[in-house]
Image 1 (cartoon, rainbow, N blue to C red):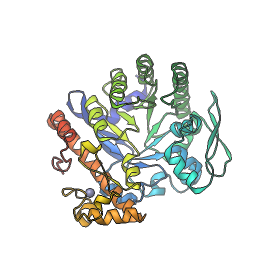
Image 2: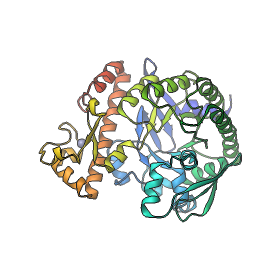
Image 3: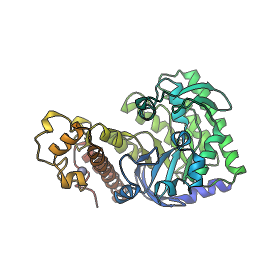
Image 4: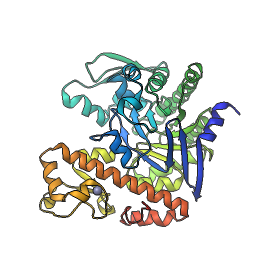
Amino acid sequence: MDPGRELGVNSFEIGARDGAARAGVLHTAHGDVRTPAFVPLASHATVRGLQSSEVAALGFEMVLGNTFHLFIRPGHERIAKLGGLHEFMGWERPIITDSGGFQVFSMGHGGVAEEIKASGGSRGQGHGSVLEIAEEGVRFRSYLGGEEKFMGPETSMGIQQALGSDVVLAFDECTPFHAGRDYTAGATERTHRWLERCLRWREENAAGGLFYGIVQGGTWEDLRSASAQRVAGSSIDGIAVGGSLGQDKDQIREVVGWTLRELPETLPRHLLGIGDVDDIVAAVAQGIDTFDCATPTRLARHGTALVPDPGARWRLDLKKPSEQDSAEPIAADCPCPACTDHTRAYIHYLARAGELTAVRLLVLHNLTFMHALMETLRAGVGSGNLEARGEAILAGDSPYDICPD
Ligand SMILES: [Zn+2]
């Protein structure tokens, strides 16, 4: 057994199981992450509107930094000179960094990622665009200033090393849902070759952090299975499930299932970009350990709170006229500042007026909701009643009621 796999086994401990679900602890150089866990996005070295100390106070043990955005601005070399990403953003706990593949390929496949639009387009600095996708890597035009940039597996590994990431993701080609089978098969093969180049770079540079491979393969069962087997057979510490998972929730579960059945029990599993309440309940039951998603913070930016209301997809639009006279809190049992100190009417007014306080309060609320959700699911795995807790959440029970905290 090679040293990388040995480290992988030791870096993740499963403390309890309930069916296929696991509750565990991921050990990193900056501390432990109890799983299952939701990982808030700190794409631009900040969780939107919050100081890092506030994110820690909410109970989160890991955040996700964005390799692509931090490469473009302020630059990984600058961050390295300033002590690395933990020091730069004042966050002492673990950081997972995505590889940049998703953002680079979002430009190339026409669906420019929303955060790119937010960073470039709205400020009139022009959109990024892909110039060439080749075996070596991807040449693209920066969304800031328009200069030409290059990112390949070695670039991505170098950036993540400079940032000082605790959980490094392999550079992958992220194919969109509309890509055909032949394109997806070719891109998945290239992702596997890039995985080998990432591993080689890490070995030659004695790179730190845990290293996760990314399973691709789109929505084809044989491609997903083959990709999962190939990635799981490499010297990795964990696995991320990426790419297009389908066009509806049933298909997402099916694709995740095809992937998980090929993976060894011992490795931690991260599901990229999935964060709806019902998707998380289903994926935890399937055996996913960690999640990241822009939804809680993105909804906050648009004046929407997460609430225990399955009929409204767990969303409450506080900008609705019906909220303007409400003296109620968003959720009476939520311990966050938005709910303990303020009314819906106040937050409605702030959101309609475009006040930053509205975004801050709703980020605090939405992340409190996500943390309570994960705590209750984790406790469910520990006590062997995950299914009942999941069903209660899906029926509209509040995660705060049954949360052990
Ligand atoms: Zn709240």
